[in-house]
Amino acid sequence: MLKDLTPGKPATSVTAPAAGLERGDSGAAVKQLQTALVKLGFMTQTQMNSGPGVFGPQTEASVKKFQSTWKLGVDGEYGPKTKAALEKALAGQKPPTSSPAPSTPAPSTPAPGKVTKPDMKWVPSANYGSRNGADIDSIILHHTASNNTAGDLATLTKKGTDVSAHYLIGKDGTIYHLVDDKMAAWHAGKSSLHGDTSPSVNARSIGIEITNDGSGKTPFTEAQYRALEKLVPYLAKTYNVPMKNILGHKDVAPGRKIDPADNFDWGRVRRATDAVI
Image (cartoon, rainbow, N blue to C red):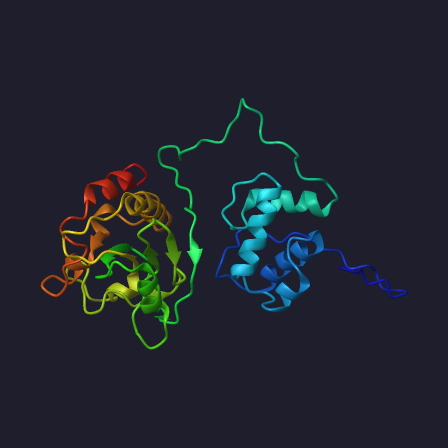
């Protein structure tokens, strides 16, 4: 980025914004972050111009690229460690050229009570609404009633189907993020949480769909369980969801829904979650 060198006018400096930005945020601080990433070569001006001040998929990818270069945890969120590294980079310091010393290796699994945001793919759905001020206090699991992940993605994202979920777990364990957690996905329908219908279950919950025909005969895959053992604890810890509110669709819509199917192993998900909440 060229500095403004107009006679009598001081050069414009690029600084790091305050920490605490993530996907879905917008405003002057996000634009400040984008400007810094452009200056450092982690984002192009064209990419920034497509959504100045909006923390979308391109900004998240640029943050991840920066975090990888600076040997940070790659989660795409602009936190204190990323801010500190960005300040160093803007001051002219070079990123580290080697991994951390063997004496302090990064743990391969989260410590008890700690969670790490799992890898996921952003595939935005056209179907969502406002939470209308409701806090997230529950996680609802579903099966998709099909064994076709591509078809499930189409159904959950295409405008006009009027159905969605925040996440879809594919047969191969890929986690697809379809609706921003700040918004309400359309997955629960006429439901109640322990008999409470206000706010609605859609407004207060995170919905997770799992590709499975729901026959009770088709096994949920090992890859799907491993993905759920990462995603559900992460969400429960992030939003302070109690174990009693981690439920299936059949629990919030008894007599109307049967998912997830009876062969779903709730024990694996609950044990992984109990370790962090």
